[in-house]
Length: 307
Length: 324
Image (cartoon, rainbow over all chains, first blue to last red; front, top):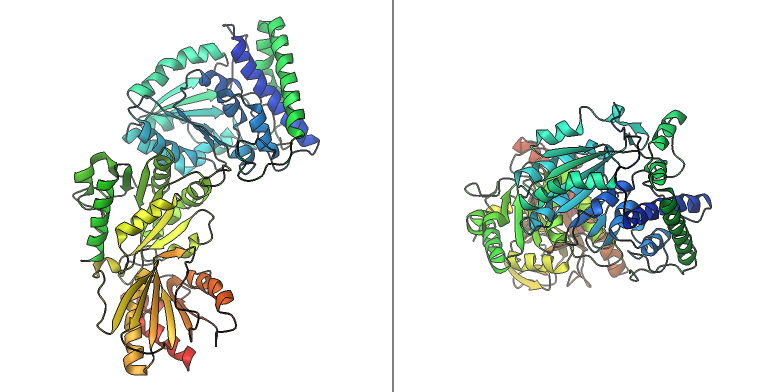
């Protein structure tokens, strides 16, 4: 069973210019990365979040400056939705001057203010639980983004158990895109995420919408409860990964990729307000082009020179 | 005072003096006070800063790292050092790497306490010395309790490093007295290293290097070597195992023997020898002797366990053979 059907309809609520900018900044940033890889300009690997951009954008408005955000291997969108600094992120990915982490961390290992990503699946949840233990009672929370594949890791269950026992403000955001690298959910997950959360007595909320405003309105009281009770919460988004797992390693059948593309928010957001969308889309595309040109021309980052 | 009580007192003093320190582990709360009673009294005194946890070594280490990341300090107890294998990812891939993989120093004040060692009949999964599996991990320091080092000073030093540390405590050592040695020997601390010498003897025939858990077995061997074989030995016991600290008094050593309770292969003893060879090359008369436990699992039956682990007679035989 792949439970990733997002409704194929236009957003009911008009998205703000700010949200549209954020969505399209991430979209064009990720596209640029794949282009740079094709050109042989980038080293290593990268994991784009094409199709999933609306999730961190929706959440960004629900998070406070004193919240901790834990991200994963597919974390560019998580970062850009919280810190719109494409120069610093691209410099990190390209190992150029001005890199967020001096070029040491690269795509998967970013630590900037209260944003931290790591490249090992499930590893962040116990750490986030420890941070949440410290934050409990302050009104701040720890938010950890994980995927459907992450639920194969034992660390997830050890952390959920403690988070529930100790009632810590931990918000677990699951980007369930139906595929773990190349393995579909049906081949890697028995039962459901909802039932797993229920087993720990943890509240679970399923989001099928990709309407930023609708998502926020549904989540706002739940996220507030995470802070005030405090208590953990699992929010599961049914979403789609449009691109490959990393770069050019998509083994899904063409019809499945087509289905994923058909549920992309991009076209529907464009239809909802064509003129404004086109304007901001062009603006963000050009912004990313400038960022690429500027950062590519910078000298290599040196250790100790982190921004 | 017994080593376990000394450790317990050190933890009390530490948590009293620094309210940012948390302690987490399985069964650490009162009235149980930890499998080896090292944490006795702490939960009664310090409340929620001391937490008995589920059986989740990986997540306990991760939660400790999270508390450290958020600005506090954490001591994590792994009930038996063997189980630290379950926390390998959190320790090596997160806590240790986080200190440097973000391009700037990130403090992660985390101490993972690991009760080690055999000679108690606990069998293959409750008796090991896993120090060797954590040697050479960037950002990770290894320490071990000895009868000669003040535990409070060691904890303060480990937290002062800013990076995660593993702190090994031999289970047999818990029941021994601090600072107690045979009248034959004198002990002095030279920087980090406890130096145990035969009182009034001349230049040593052999300098032994070992870790805290093996001190008493090594001293027994030294006593027999002196009284029965007429060989004078000196003993060096560093509290910091890795990176290997400067070991004093070795520059004119007649012979060096490193004694390590871990099973053979990729050991701390080999690491010590690797550090010493360039320094002593040209002056050594023979290769450094390495004494380790046998290459095998640690059996439960005491007569079989004894054959696998390093014992005083094995140390004595190795020194005699090297010097013969």
